[in-house]
Length: 102
Image (cartoon, rainbow, N blue to C red; front, side, top):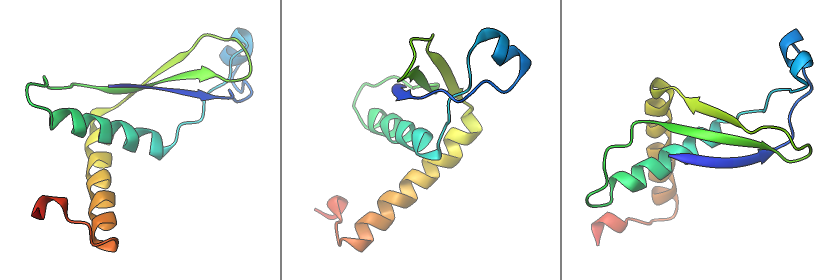
């Protein structure tokens, strides 16, 4: 599963980044939670093949520079998938919304 994000790159901080003229993109926990939600939604579809990985493609919103592919490690994906289900569960309880009971 890929999700594209536009963000401003940070300032180069290492010699390699300075030489390339490229800084890092900020990554947020909400980025991986969103991808985990997409992957779980795909799993729920009949006939959807197993999805092995999740990644963001970061695109600089200020300067025309090459995009960056950030592949999230599977151990984090497992942990944040659990977080996603906890968020859904909390939402359902707070709003008395129980779609599986119907």
